Image (cartoon, rainbow, N blue to C red; front, side, top):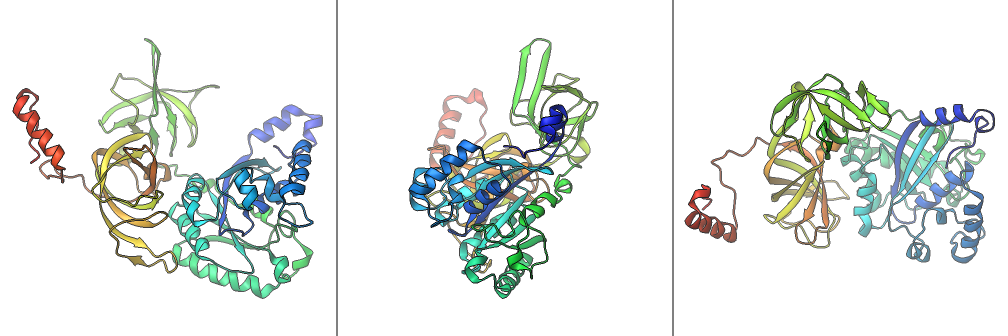
Length: 469
């Protein structure tokens, strides 16, 4: 739903143009369970009058039946829509809400606080530019607050707003706010989070959410909504290194061959020289095709179809880049891993790895360490359990074009897929790219692979298979 504006009644074309060109901010709420994440989102929608009348009527009915806010309106019901969420008063799945103000458009993800749903939180945070970390003023920083903050830092989210909630339950005490702020600032400096803002709020009462509250006159900062509208994200994009992962080859007829996908980073212009990876073949951009028509240039996060001057072999999973700033090709990486499966990580077990649009098989060869989420210190590990985070070495069976996650998020991220169940078991972020393994260097093969290799060499010598035993 959009913010109401006088332009709608006077000049609808001008309003639509204004709305179309607003900046878009993707953000999430995270923190420990019962810190008030869903209530905060409900309050943002309610106080900015962004709820339809029929939705508001339904909210009042649901509040009378399953509300958990006493005599007040339980605004968390606007976000927690699953029956099990309403019965337990918790968030289980990630809920997305869209709204806009006169200054900016927002997509907000309400992430669960329970430890067992940490994987849902990591999923919701993967595309966000800002995180609202909720802290209960009565409880301070908890283990899950630290875990979510660590994941926020590893996922490359540069902007954090620490919303110290339920200030009404501590009599709006400034010392409580100051103490929590100092403790979180120490943790933020350790995690390398530099852009941090602190706001004392009461999501239930609406204090400092949309407008500054008189009940905390000692707070001289902006309201939460003002911070969200004003945070600068335009400089977060990497515009120097062009990356275009090919998702689909469009061949409707003999006269057109286009490569479809979403530009991950950099600027692509008509006439640019590009290199296709991993083949290394070069050509020039002939056209940049969109639904609205051809473009001369395009910025990141736009879905486009690219045509080239030359007929070169490009397929799904390949990547287009500028030759002078092309990513490294390798089959060996060091990566941070968030384990998301009930079954623990198995070292030297075959998994599928998906980098952008490129799927490849491989193995996690070793675990360097895992993270103690309370102290952020490293610990030796031989396995990773559900929701544990560690640094691993992985070896895939083909060269992959990838970047360090800190440089380009979309081409430095990957997921790990169980080959038997096809379930995503981990999310990874490339920390370092090692030199490709030499052809003469043998990896560890299973007995079944060695036996199959021998059988092929003995019975089908014309295949010229290399020995692996």
